[in-house]
Picture 1: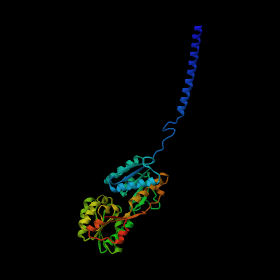
Picture 2: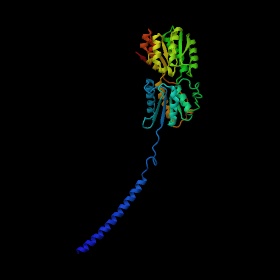
Picture 3: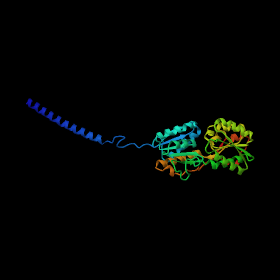
Picture 4: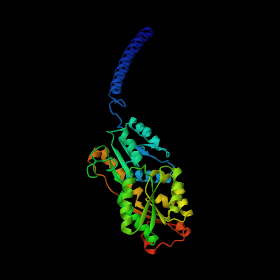
Amino acid sequence: MLKAFMGWRRVWTFTGAMHAAAFIAVLVARLNVAVLLVPVAGEAQPTPRVPRIGLLAPNSPTDPRAVRILQALRQGLRELGYVEGQNIAIEFRWAEGKYDRLPGLAAELVRLKVNVVVAFSPPAVQAAKQATETIPIVMAAVADPVAMGFVVSLARPGGNITGLSSMQRELVGKRLEVLKEVVPKVSRVALLGNPANPNYASLVRDAQAAARALGVRLESMEARDPSEIDNAFAVMTTAGAGAVLVVGDPMFLDHRTRIADHAVRRRLPTVFATSEFAEAGGLLAYGPSLSDGFRRAATYVDKILKGAKASDLPVEQPATFELVINLKTAKALGLTIPPALLQRADQVIQ
């Protein structure tokens, strides 16, 4: 009886083991099929490539102007639904005031295959233009993009460049008007410009025309590099200039405090193109809002990323202008700012 029971147990154990093995085999087979059906990351469902913007600028990232334009560009992108690090990336290239670095930095952005380049100032636009004929370029703060050969026309740019014009030629006469409101008896004004700037000749012509209309004699003083700024002020003082009109130039922007100090020491009222000069000690500044311009530049980036061609996007002109008055400098020069002009000011520096 015991032997029969032991025999039956061996048969049951063997049969159970057979069933268990079959069950495990089926289970493994089903698991393998399930694994095969799971999509492989990067193959079945590839992660979309985040668009990349290249920002090319001639200044330093710590420069107050650079901080301002970057904040404005990011704000404009956020308003359009772009969040840096999530659905858009920005590659920064700063020349740190060394303009000869711009071509190499532009070439780096091209090698990175960015979707669009945002270029600040004519030297940066020129470097980007030389680096690529295919990647779209959005320019900002360019006085006369047609004269500089960046676009065929404002309405139909025609190439891979579009963006915003700063209207410096149209505004040079307005700056003289503002200057004459502060010093109505001025008869001789020095124009400080950089003849190496492609816009210089046209700006001088426009300023001369405006000066004649205001009954003011305008004399051009040139400075190609920082070492010539001191001499230019010495010459204008000897020539009997009663005020100074400084036309826009990246080199002057880098040395704005030096220029403002020269003017105060020589008791010369000054008017500039951008607020940074007045913030550095210049008397007056009148020009387009740089922050507004870079916020609007984001709309070009958005349209290009959505398929628009730069050649079909008209170049826009400034929509917002800023008048900045430095009362501290006015006091140092012994000048009283007319109340009507103070009321029109967008910023008054005490």
